Length: 318
Image (tube, rainbow, N blue to C red; front, side, top):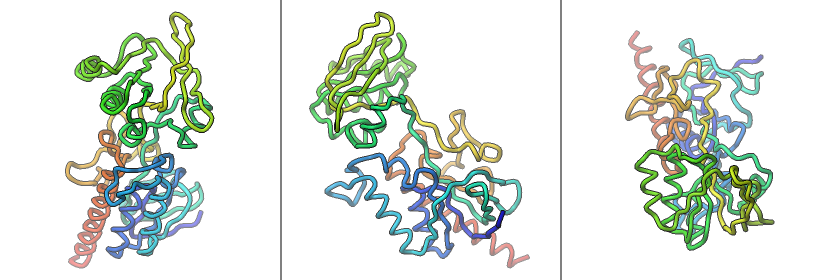
């Protein structure tokens, strides 16, 4: 196993990782960035992004990630393929093993491994999601494309209720598919969706198939109690059954909440481990937007720069 020493290591790409790289590189930290298992993050699964500042005509998710990557590379970020397989944050020098064979000793580490949406696991769901055909896990990102049309939201928690409430303001009708005879969403969120006339909750209902060749045309659903199967014509299928942060390898060292999101010190990107910072969806279970991820990436790079400067100053004094 060969070792390498770097000043700033960024684990993961996407808006947070690439923005952190841009700022770290401009600060002279010579960052090394590993793109991870999903280079570009969740935006690689998004078709058109219309809510990121600076793109008045909108931009395709993968194209936007390519732009961010090229901007980071322009300032001489060392961008590499590969993903972190284990870490050792027990000492002053942070050790990160990449692809189980290459160990990096980093003075500072920025974690931007993101979070992955949970999916139902249907072949049709994956095919239409990957084709940008109307299957999505982000109502705020993609709801606009279904203005005045009928859509389905799958889920029973606050996220599903929030998505349905948001979509109800722009869509003709919103169906919420709930597997059981009750929702997990908070009382206030349930009251909100029940007050909207164009939201219909279908209890004890599961999805059998998302129908459509290139785009979503309908969904085949089944009532688990009655066994009734029917098809509902829709243009959008939103899966809101939660996200899971990609934090497994850090659990031994980094403080996390009950869902596995990294906890940062309020008003900063700092974690409980000195010299380790977190940004983007890996520490944000609330907003999960590209622009907020980018902002936190900036914070992480600035925090890392200040940490390294203070460390250097202390070494000179001693």
